Image (cartoon, rainbow, N blue to C red; front, side):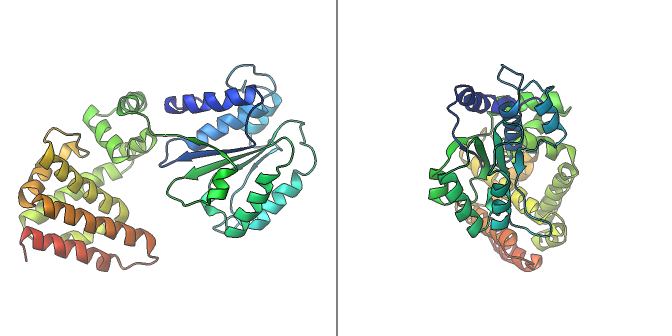
Length: 326
């Protein structure tokens, strides 16, 4: 498995600390969106337990590497929720610590990897905090953390944090070109829709959402022409959050276009629609409507079993008024 090019620097920093025997016992990999943190951690685990390689990367052929490849390495614990549970409770932490109280099975470092620390319950976090304060010998904790989740300051203070960021647009486009054959314009659009995550951009271009997005924008254009935005409601039945996000990016493009016509638009294939929105909505109204769609996204995401049609009414009514359709 090759490492994503934008993760090489972080990988090298961490492994150089390991080689110098200065690696912290608790490592937190922090990111804001999906840019390959799991792959980074997996490769770190392989190198840490590898018994042959003297290079930055694992040999991939020794006994330990083979065991990790087959998901049978006894001293790598990946903590996930128990069956039929959505959170990682204190019992999961306790069971894991009990297993590693003795020396490592293969006399190498023991690794505890928590891929989704936002799933830890309050009691599990408190239990883990105590362990991190006085960790078992030769045990390394690797935690995968997304910034959108608020974590206790005491938790962060017990770890060394490595931030990983999306690559530059140039690197992202270069990587996408090698992975998928699409028009350059489409590569830019997908990358900008994905907040510069090449992994998410590739996913967008390969699944049905790409075609669905174009159809959805056609419906918006048609609804504006027919002066009836309420016709859009039936098109929100599938992928509600994605469609609200697409509208958000479209309005954001209209705001950008107002200031700088040649600015980095997200929806490069929707310039006609962006111009229509810019022409029919003044800047004040564009800011007003983008704020309403942001609220709509928040409610749709955070309110369980929300009535989709009800949530969509406010932004559509406001938008109709702004367009003077009402």
